[in-house]
Length: 148
Image 1 (tube, helix red, strand yellow):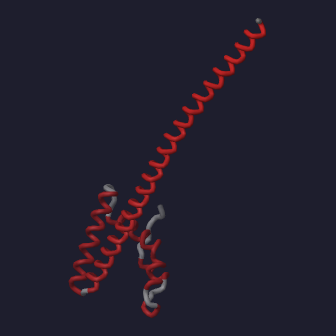
Image 2 (image 1 turned 135 degrees about the vertical axis):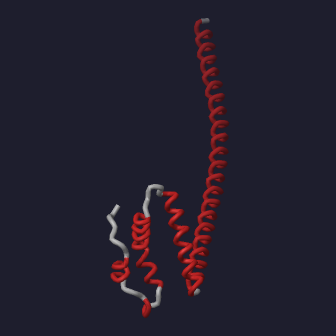
């Protein structure tokens, strides 16, 4: 009789353990499927956001290039060009002043000189060789500013 009771107890223990493991496995499977769906949704969302960001950057670059092209064309017309260049420079200064409220006109000139020096080689390489000034000559025309 003790043997039957021991056998029954061990069998019950094994059945309860198997049932617990089966329920745990089912719960983990459901959780895995749920998390996989969330990952897929977030991946698609991230890909869509990256594409939208790329399009926005491309649009901003195209707009900037168009504005620069229009400025070059307007500056090419003698009298209109002088007025346009002055207006563009004034607007650039006012935009710069919003970002740098304590800045002076001299600070703006130094900031523009630093930015111009960074892209000078690229701009000079785009010019035809017969009209291209030397980088040293252009650098000598820029104002002397304290490095940041």
